Image (tube, rainbow, N blue to C red; front, top):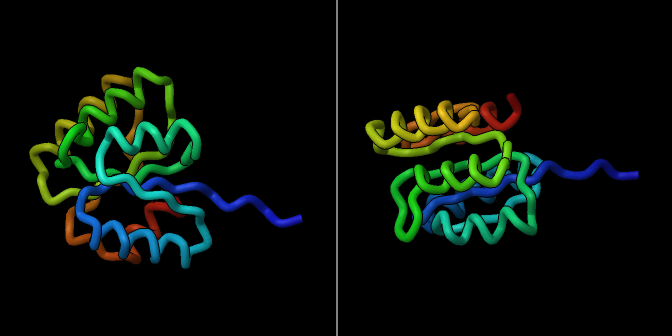
Length: 123
């Protein structure tokens, strides 16, 4: 019997960056889905139920901070790894997550080093 792969959702509006992350995470033996906004991520969460979410903060439609609010409101407790080039918004997301009872497993600055991301996924 084969063990079930862990499920990871990458939420980032930069398609090229998301594609690189998806390939690296798949090569690490995980099942991956990608969303270009928080709104699309909500749809995917409902069906895919990711155990880990790799989340950008600055995105169109629904940003990462709003998505964290949705996660908390929905009682969703996935491991969250923030990947962002905007430290001011990252700090806000971390504070919101803490207030809402969620924890941020890691905060990584873009450009993200793939070994660092894979280590955060494994932690």
